[in-house]
Amino acid sequence: MSDVPPVLLRVVIVDDEPLARAVLREYLTSELHVEVVAECANGFEAVKAVSELAPDLLLLDVQMPKLDGFEVLDLVAREVAVVFTTAYTSTRCGRSRCTRWTIC
Amino acid sequence: MHPILARLERLAAYLALWCAIGVLVGLVLTQQGLTWPEALVLVLPPLLVYAFVCLSAWYVCRAMPLASSGVPGVLTASIVAASVAGALWLALDETWISTLESMPALAPVTVRFRAQTPFLFAVSVMLFLLVLSVHYVVLAFEAFRDAERQQLELKVLTRDAELRALRAQVDPHFLYNSLNSISALTGTDPAAARRMCLLLADFLRTTLRVSTQESITLAEELTLADRFLSIEQVRFGPRLQVERRIDETASQCRIPPLVLQPLLENAVAHGIAGLIDGGTIRLDVERRNGRLSIAVENPRDPDALPRTRGSGVGLENVRRRLSIVFGGTARLDAVPGPSGFRVALDLPCAIDE
Image (cartoon, rainbow over all chains, first blue to last red; front, side, top):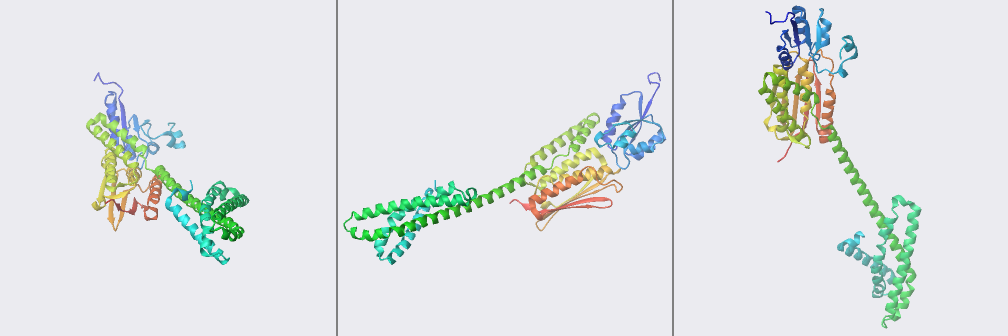
């Protein structure tokens, strides 16, 4: 057990495109202290995964069908660090939503 | 050069007309006591020379165009030119009668010839004015025809320019998404990444080629559509299904390039992309009674906000292009349903033999 870092970062990947999820997972496999605990293809799965698995970090896409990234954050009650992984540009990011999450 | 002098047959016709005028003038002279031969001898030779003098009216018209010179200017120029022509006629007439006088046989009649000088002077001035007005009328007619032609050319140019401006372009989002997909594939499935690169290259090459053409066959457009959908299927995986019902007899119909492409882009971006489980895009092509109908149908999220990213612009662009190319004989109908969206094109099917 000595070669495993003491702190394990538990990550959930959320993206509606399988290829985007695959590339994130690929990047993360080389990180020994990171564990991908779930991959979600839509917002509903993401909300469920966050409440059930209590990850440390959410890699979250913004533009997704039905429930977008912002709405996911509205729905999760738990504290979770978020990194937006998105093609969504600041010009199309609604001002109120972006300032609320202090991103973009 | 004067247009009448430029062509021999025109000159011949012109001189024949003047012969006829000479005969008419001769007819008047016979009423005044001259015999037919006398009248013709007196009038015809100087009149045919005078015909060339009258051609100078062309240059008067050119120098004093009706449109820019104003009525007083044109009238003054006409009167001056007619006076000069009349003076030339007097000189011609006098030279001719003197020549006749020098022939002993004809000398006696020349006295009666000279009596006609005032009448012939008046006739020559009026003939010059007549020729001048005919020139003006012809020039005005030509100017009108030129203006008409220019207007037509302008119309064609405007239409071409508009078509160029409306020419469908590859959606930059599509390019961007495809590059992201390729980048993702390079790590996990290099062979698929290469396939995708080739598909994309092929798609772009074909798009560039057909977009400069006035029309392409439906078969070409469908090939392009297949490439596009294959690329999008890499990105969406099983979420994007396509169902085609293609009438093979329609494949040679000629259509403006890239009219189907924007419809498919819309169907993916505003239909499939908004659905968690994706769905099926239906493409129907049918040829019937010389008409071609193309329909694209896609499911969409009923709860989604009205379309956001400029799909209306894409459809309006296609609609406008169809109306420029086909006038009123082509139509685009967009039918938003509760759970789907259907766009139908109906256009004439022209086939190159």
